[in-house]
Image (cartoon, rainbow, N blue to C red; front, side, top):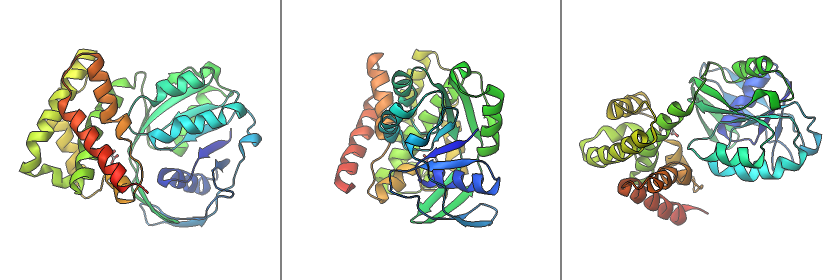
Length: 298
Ligand code: KPL
């Protein structure tokens, strides 16, 4: 079963490098006329220089594993463009935020769908890509394997090799919400205040963080989603573990790119409003990041 990677972003380039190292059958679909060369340094200092093999959408056969290491807002346009060429492929979504899987399920109701929460840390500067932490990938089937062109066990085996170490869940939703809740604090605050993750432990940010966590906790309770009881502890744990990192949203703003805010705080606000809950703190962050995005994007 061929692995097809969408795009050559930071995670996509790392996954291409893993395919090269493990000699997996793979190719990349890119919007560029040709694939760009990659200079990849793994976390163990192993270095690899390569140009990934390219695949055109018209060359898709039917039973590929289509891995989408894209930003949340890139997924629906990519899937819509690919739809005429798709048949029984299995899709793996790896974006931050929530709301995308529902949109993809509507566009491709007949394809098997897997969602993954990736904790891989990687950044890209031009051709150069640096893996800074290996990070587990948490995965769950969103729609059924029977729709796929390949066997469930084979698909999971391929994914375990590509995204190792992997942890499969019967129900991924509580973990997706936990990740969303954490991203909804760290990402916008670090982008707005131009700080690294660790700086969020400073006293001046605690009031805002507490209010954000309270709003998320109330919404999760209302929706019956477990796993946010020790919200501040969990958040502080992630902040401490990633203290020296700049969040993905900080990097997006720093490089004048669009952010995933609509799928993070925007998603929480929409869900909260539907439930009639007060989401003032998340709404304010959403709007402030949108304004910053407008001011900085090219
Ligand atoms: O997932 C992240 C991101 O930057 O998008 C966190 C956990 C905040 C780490 O930086």
